[in-house]
Amino acid sequence: MVDAGAADLAIGTETSGAFPHLVKLPCFEITRSVVAKADHPILKVKKLTLAEIAAYPIIIYGARHSARPKVMNAFKKAGLKPKISLSAVDADICKTYVELGLGIAILADITIDPVRDTGIRARSARELFESSMVYVTLRSASYVRPYVADFLQIIAPNLTATAIRDAMRASRKQTIERV
Image 1 (cartoon, rainbow, N blue to C red):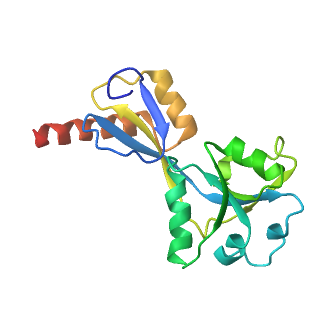
Image 2: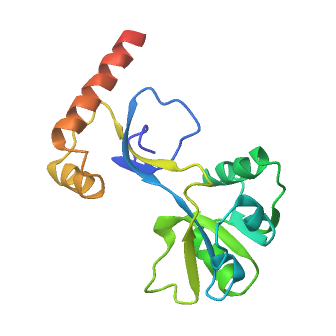
């Protein structure tokens, strides 16, 4: 959508292809937590391990979600086969399944809202699962309006107008050198 000009920017994790006319700027890192019903035993375990997590039915993002391979690879490297009970397209559905008692979930920390998610709790698992980087993607030859630059700096303080401009120039230069 961004490459075709239908959108000014995209915000997300890894992309599955090369887009030579786009520039990806790192915004922030996403770490993961184990999410369970408030009274679930996994929340009381002294030291959280992959083996402890694998002992319970797990609700996980669907196969097309970029986080799924990172979660599954952690279990594979540890020689564990997790009990995947359900998969869902997004965190809200995963959290609903958790609230219904259908298992525990491994979700991005930012998906947990302590005010809204009153029946569930999260426990950091950042040491157990690889994090993901969130990027903003822009067309390298586009004009970034001041309000867009302001918005980007709110979500990622490192993305100053100068940093955005410099990254876009460098991307254009690389595109020219490839031609």
